[in-house]
Length: 351
Ligand code: IPM
Ligand code: MN
Image (cartoon, rainbow, N blue to C red; front, side):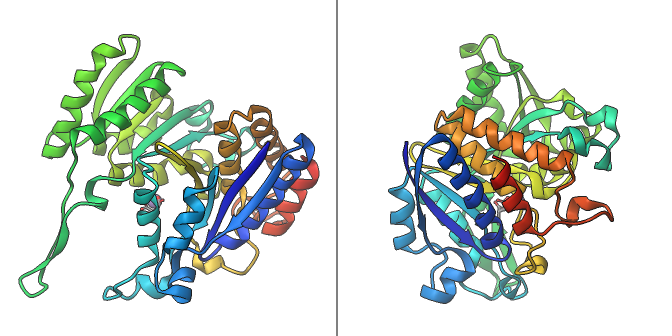
């Protein structure tokens, strides 16, 4: 198969983890006889420095015309500490999600057999966890009306949802649940927020079209607790943009490290694959970041292209590396820590 993949390394550890995913994908291409053509493009702080825009038109053209986008990370401390900055790297990611119409963010949470005892949560609580948080990605408070008034002394961000935005996300959730344990949980704050009440109303109306799916409705604050108390109680969770952002960082504790969590962002056309972690600036350039989240995001990419065997080969080699302690310092627990690039080399060689 011939594949054009846009490659957006971004900021911080982005370029380092992307390099490892490329090594692994190239090894897969060699083994399964695919022809991958990588199309690098600028995004984030790197793009601001080069052309003054964190998601330049040229980058969008490359993404829109590719079969998939593989993305590293975005964000730079120079901007975090400067509230007055007009252009921020994160805007690049938001613009990309919006322009590519990536309304659904699929964030799976599962455990790795060899890491269960490294989690701060007890084995019996987390072993066998297999859930998906489906986060709405192009609406809500991330994209609502915002601004300042009263000479800058009042700031506001608005959480706005339209019915169609909830419907299309929920539809994906129902369809996903049908292929899994047929349980869907709508997570909101309907006891307080009007937009959450629209979520409930919309999902409730859709229930009759999916009689085999068992739907529950829970409040975000309660789920923040139950998710780590008994993650096996969940199968597919659908939730608003900000709630999903927060819950998925929390869920990473179940897997063992933020450095392990992959995601896909899907819409109507080209999809994006990215680790859920950020740019981890403290580690940038040190060759110490965990590349597995990006590598596993590449596995999701192959899966979505129906290249199931290729996806499984990646997951298998990742599991093998973990079982043999070929791990970066976030997982090495005082034992030998491998470099980011060494982990990438090992994975590529063992495909
Ligand atoms: C994520 C990140 C982004 C988000 C940031 C970098 C804008 O935290 O993908 O979860 O909040 O969506
Ligand atoms: Mn996040």
